[in-house]
Length: 262
Image (cartoon, rainbow, N blue to C red; front, side):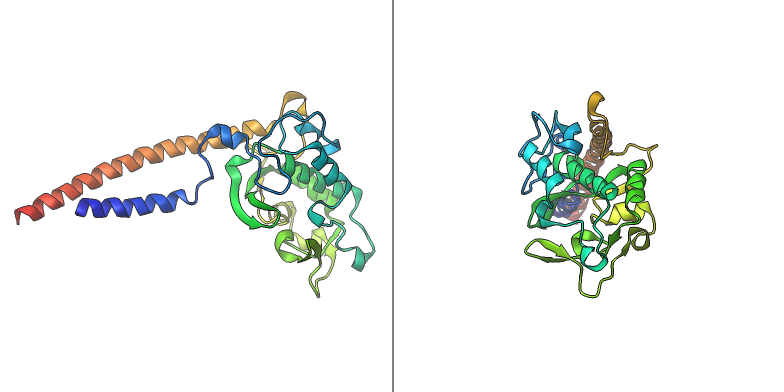
């Protein structure tokens, strides 16, 4: 009985531990993962063409040509970047808008994000990525392009009023510049999209939201790095677990033997 008791307790520990891991331990799946959402393809593949800023993902993409056109031409998911126009009579600058479009291209098209995917409950998706390591140079350039633009929300998925899918400023919210809302580029990138990004020095493996695709997608190598680290860690954990199971079995056996002699 003691042995079974220890196994049950240990099983609960393993189940709790596993519930916080990535959604798959299959390397190929993690490197070819399209989010479960309104617009993503079921599996990544080549497209004849993708529009403008999404073009680098053409050879292996989770987005279709139609999606790449839509994210440049209209408000995807009815979400407007010009949410401060009513209060400021200013639309988002073209330079800042370009970076948000680039972010959208990554979100819709990037297939090498499986390692960072978590489940979510949103009308537009049942999965999202969380704390993807974004290269500091990309983040710094993005914030520099937007720091004089206006917003009324800190965490965009959480701090707007959403009505029929449209985002508007909360009652009483003030429109002020990005540089007044966010302390710095790290604060901006990590919070504007609710922890989707993790500000990461360029000296460490990190993702790019824009790249020259002539040599392939550099984000694949980054994903492989973190997946390989995780898999090696998982093997070490499995070895550790197997030793604990053996030790618990031996201890339980000794307890049972001792009790049976009394």
